[in-house]
Length: 340
Image (tube, one colour):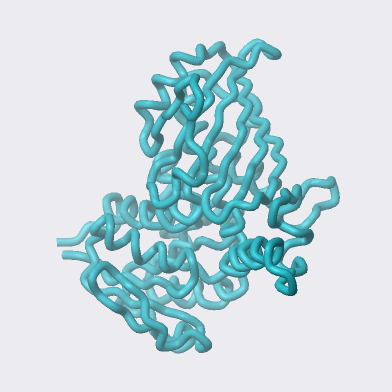
């Protein structure tokens, strides 16, 4: 037997990816509902070889449904997630609303699948920030071997992390560079994104960091180990899909780069592409549509006793959002919701 599954926010970038990935991975679905706001009501969405028509999220009755994948933002989630959870439907939420609630598990299945067991406290599981998700997949197997003390990460985050409006703005500004009269002033981003990079994602905090940078710190501690020190600089770049990260890691113990490479090759969810030659690494364009987190440029950091550098790339709409949510649903099914 399968599950009755809801995808809320089915017309957005992440919601559509959730439907695609549920079908691709042949998640055991007996019935599926695609929900959207009233302005998108009746929009058609693809689920494998089926076409779904969106239903009204505001009036939907979650009673009798097993799992709901939410991709609707924090404000709407605050209204509808408790309603679904109270009706007995387990919510897997992609927004930031519940990530830091101690009673709600924050899960990356390759890293802390056992945390899923805590879902029953509120019937909600949180999906991490896109930039955190791919990084902790890389950190966990190395942490298990040599214990990570400190991480310094610089991100190169695609515009799809800001939704459809971010992608449209990059496209329109790029066209405007070549077509007179079609110039596009910044609206979604703080400055021009075409042919530029912006060291600012989310709101600024009192200490000078941004909320996106704070998220990476707090979420890494919750998912992997609260003792790990993390400092991040998060940058928006003119790439449509795919987040990249340059990660510097300091360990308690020495870890040779060759051993690290072997560990990562065997780790779940990771593909190592690390040839010391022209093109012997993965870029965001190459990761689009893939499930894996790609690791390249693994090398010793000679400036500290126990340091490594690596390059980490992943499809942020997949591992950073939709794929991780579906993997949580798979883990939930295996651990807690077995049927038949």
